[in-house]
Amino acid sequence: QVKLVEFGGGLVPLGGSLRLSCVASADVVRTSTMGWFRQPPGKERELIATRRSGTYGTARIIKDSVEGRFTMSANREMTAVYLQMNDLKPEDAGVYYCNTASDPHFHWGPGTQVTVSS
Image (cartoon, rainbow, N blue to C red):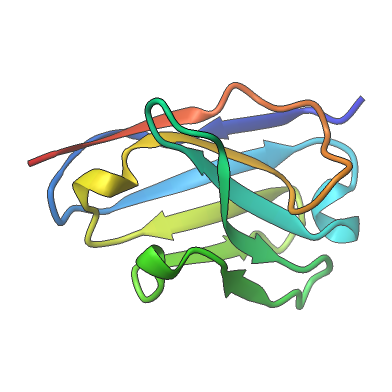
């Protein structure tokens, strides 16, 4: 069973930065288009960025409000994906998850909480 574990979240001041990491078991990052998702408090989970499979997979921002501030990438070993988040705003708060960008999804990991203080 594929295991996804996210970490790197925390409390950050308005305008600050965080780098989230997601470690994936098996060969998920190499073979699947991966995505970062965000679930704001009281709202549904939404897709915010994707990265196509493979060593040279291209990343794409899906959520307009994070364009120019967030960047998705993967490590050379294809075992993890990252989300670099800059100029964080209060509306960026929530629990962040990684998974395949579209159905079928693997079992969701625990996510990592991001809180932005204003």
